[in-house]
Length: 334
Ligand code: NAD
Ligand code: UD1
Image (tube, rainbow, N blue to C red; front, side, top):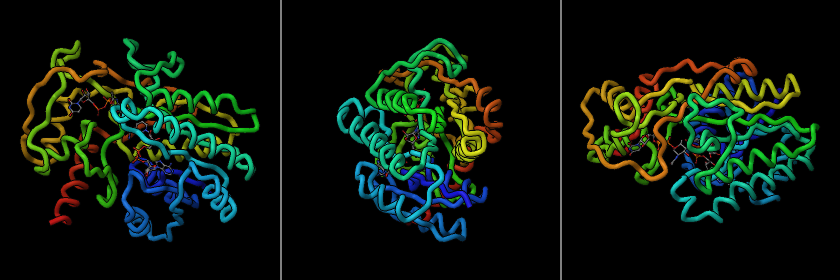
């Protein structure tokens, strides 16, 4: 059986990808330092999948941790999720971001090379496109960074592009991941006040935050609020399965957007979430957030042509699954 290592596999996207891979017949090993995930995620993954979870509490910055995993398991390919991801924090702590995200990737590649494992899928982001009027964005659009976080993603892509052709690399540029697993047992989980729209609205819906602050209603968009390409995290997870299958079966590298190609405004999301949770969600309009762009949507054609990937789930599905997850968590906390 093909065995895949997920670095950062206990995180939001990694945990959903774990389940999609298990369902597709892969064996999966997780390495995570739990710096941004809860220690009960492996148990939850075990409960959902009904299979024993192999999880190492380790750090991609620690070469011994990596060598131990490769010695204990015959790994065929790696999906590298482990990274810090908060754009605003990266502006305050650029060195931490470069150390963890770039240093972690270099350490992982060296350990993979030593273990003769040269198939890797890398979590990149639509943030590599910067601020552009070209919408939806094709993969050959020039890269430019608007934050230290974005810099680490571009640097990661460039490092992977320097590898000799004995390596097979899948670079996946995610647009805006949203929603939760159908089991409602895993999802995006943050104790802090979220920066991103969906987790923020979710906290308004459960009553932990009073209202959503809409950052700007004077953009050149149909209703004046920012437009994004939201993609269900389970669709994203399926994209990783297809990316790995493509790498392992064809031996050819790819760089693709993972999005839907469709844009939704902030007010569209508020309406869809209100319908999902059955109540009107309070929101006020505030000035634009620094660094925000009006529209960010990705051309999905390459993912379809190269991987056979197409997002299947709607914005309503994202909101319903998010609501099932957060309202269930809320009930458990009581
Ligand atoms: P997440 O924070 O939920 O998951 C990342 C996981 O990596 C966490 O479990 C964390 O504990 C772990 N981790 C971090 N540093 C580590 C280290 N040094 N060693 C071992 N484990 C470490 O984030 P996510 O939303 O699941 O994102 C996964 C990947 O996708 C990241 O690379 C992120 O930059 C990228 N990405 C995310 C989004 C998004 O909106 N969520 C969008 C585009 C790209
Ligand atoms: C952010 C990151 C980006 C990352 C993406 C997905 C920034 C500048 N960019 O992008 O690098 O790839 O998340 O993780 O942080 N909004 C509100 N009120 C809120 C929160 C958001 O109105 O409280 C609006 C924003 O102005 C935007 C939309 O909702 O129009 C989506 O915001 P968000 O979820 O933060 O994602 P991005 O801005 O696309």
